[in-house]
Image (tube, rainbow, N blue to C red):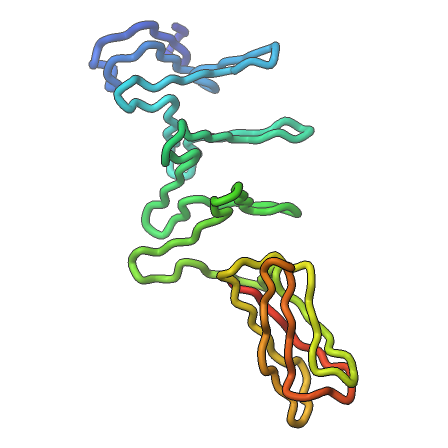
Amino acid sequence: MTTGFAEFASLADSSASNGKGSVGVWGHGADNGVMGESVSGGTGVLGLGGANGGTGVVGNAGGQAGSGVVGTSGSAGGTGVIGTSGGGNGTGILGTGSGTGNGVHGIALEGNGVHGSAGTGGIGVLAENTSGGAALKVTGPASFSRSGVLTVSAGHSTATQSGVALSTASLVLVTLQQHATGVYVLAAVPNSAGHSFKVYLSKSVSASTKVAWFVVN
């Protein structure tokens, strides 16, 4: 303990008079309350929750704009914060916003603000609103890997787009990108096994004609 209680530490404090209940280790410092450091690739600070649903680590912000938990990756990469569920339907990282705040807010200068990836049968990013509001809102251009432009050559009424991941539930939407009298899209027929779809126009075109396509599901 230092003068003026600027820094102090308490080990195995079972008294509730400290306002924090039973405490295994309590560290109070002018800069850092507790500092843990590993010099051989181990863990600086390890928090283990109790068997009855306790929490391993809790971070509470001080003041009005502090941060509860801050994680910073190494200079050559790495991850600032890693959350891993224990199995079942647990959650690796849960963010909850109060009022109009954000549950999770990701910011990137050149990379991805939020990156969600999943294996077979999973969903990379799930947007859900169970109260009737918007599940997904996009501000700015949206890019989809299963979309593009296909050209129907002059003298032809069909064209095939290959190399597209399709399933039996896929819906292929196609629309003309230029006006041609009497020409319209008759059908877009998917071939999920062949990873392709074929576009049929109402008649052969006299000049190369572009159609835009978009796959849903």
